[in-house]
Image 1 (cartoon, rainbow, N blue to C red):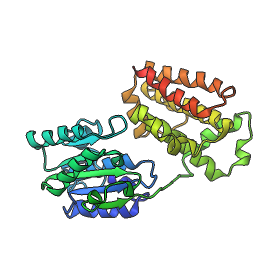
Image 2 (image 1 turned 180 degrees about the vertical axis):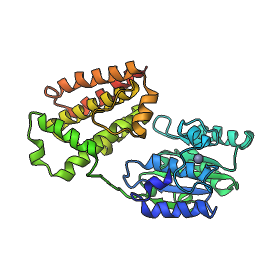
Image 3 (image 1 turned 120 degrees about the vertical axis):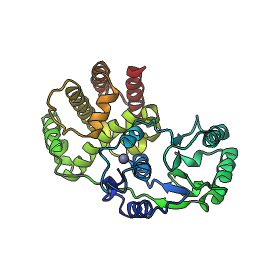
Image 4 (image 1 turned 90 degrees about the vertical axis):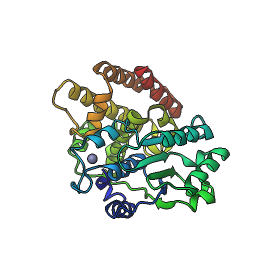
Length: 320
Ligand SMILES: [Zn+2]
């Protein structure tokens, strides 16, 4: 929940936490991601904290509330997420949303709509949002997410409370699984550990795992963020090969979890549980096979960007 971001986003955390506690939320937020890799989850955790019926009883993370579980599963009827349909967010998408808001009875006390990549609102969609923002209804909260607030119409900007996330890189050097992975990396044929400093290696390992977690949530959309998720951190064939090795080990542990076996490297965490829930044993096996297959191609493949696209497409193929 929101409390998980106290360290990585101290300022925005405080603003939102106070707004929830004092029941003084804005009717519209414009959130600039600032390159923060986890910005969508951050927004969702804010929404969860905002809507959680136990928020006043249970001041910490909500572990035991049914509603938060439903929100996590993406099926909560009072939260709508709008993303570009193709290149743009279209007016029809917003009309459907507005119609829904006008006709459906409200469950709970608030209704939230989230617009991701809000800079992709086409002109008529932007105007329709503007109208929505001009006549706010008491129980509706709008959250617009963008990488750059200046690519949003100033008329929209001026009607929103602007929050800027920071590009935070918290790497816990003491993660025990980092050490185990490093043994694997060491046993690898190269001397990458000698070239890189400790902190860099921890960051890269974390980034590879984040990449898989992101892919498992957003699937093909991952391809839009390859720069931030991968290319900025995993550089050169040697690192890509190791990254594949890390991904293979990660999926192996997810398989262990599904099979009720002890994990070999990783500590059990929410991401592993979530990925295990969304995939069958067979799907995970096929994903491991794909990774092994593509890893073999790395030494021959000159264009590593194409390789990553191929990876995502073939992992997706597993699902269909
Ligand atoms: Zn809850």
